[in-house]
Image 1 (tube, helix red, strand yellow):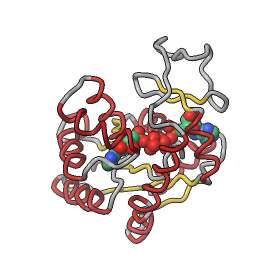
Image 2 (image 1 turned 60 degrees about the horizontal axis):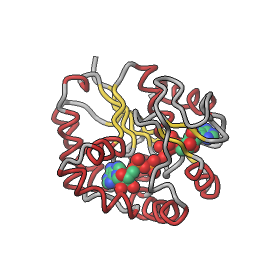
Image 3 (image 1 turned 180 degrees about the horizontal axis):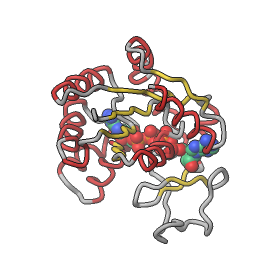
Image 4 (image 1 turned 90 degrees about the horizontal axis):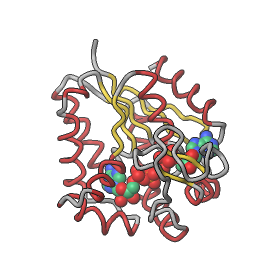
Length: 217
Ligand code: ADP
Ligand code: ADP
């Protein structure tokens, strides 16, 4: 069977991470979040993490060459043989092109791009109330709370709020998304792989629509 590559597209806070985790589990594929990979590098104080930190703190994108190299390395591992659910990558035209070139070497391509649509005011509300687990699991203080406040349901670890989930940085990240990432909507629409998803629905309904889109791809 040929591998299956899914790209979750949408603004910060649309629910890409939340959905990518569920979809990857449903399909038994790996979930690759470039944000999580950068945060892991930051925590482990690697050279890559140190380089990424200033960009992340300011809500700017990490340079394309660095990001592409990191993804290339991740995709070369054997657990990606059947494909992957990409979350937060690609985010620029150059990354999308590099990703296509990379996949073509494996006779693969981007198969389906669920574009999760949520209005800006809702994004700010979602990101301001986002609680993260060190493992990358995502909660929301109101919309998707853990059973015990500030504690991960699965592994009991302490939840935290991301430094870049503060109002000024959120607003800047949405601007960067509109400028750098939103053009990918047309890029993937032209390729016939884009499926628009109403991201304002409850989490389970969004998952259903995404799974349906993948089935029909
Ligand atoms: P992204 O990866 O696109 O930035 P996340 O998956 O981290 O988005 O979700 C952002 C916040 O919104 C999290 O706090 C998450 O719990 C919450 N959230 C995700 N999907 C929904 C939804 N369908 N309805 C309400 N809140 C949601
Ligand atoms: P969000 O939940 O807002 O979608 P992510 O966790 O995906 O955010 O990304 C957090 C930060 O990591 C970004 O603001 C950016 O600095 C960096 N980053 C993540 N993915 C990429 C990428 N594909 N290209 C450049 N920078 C990225």
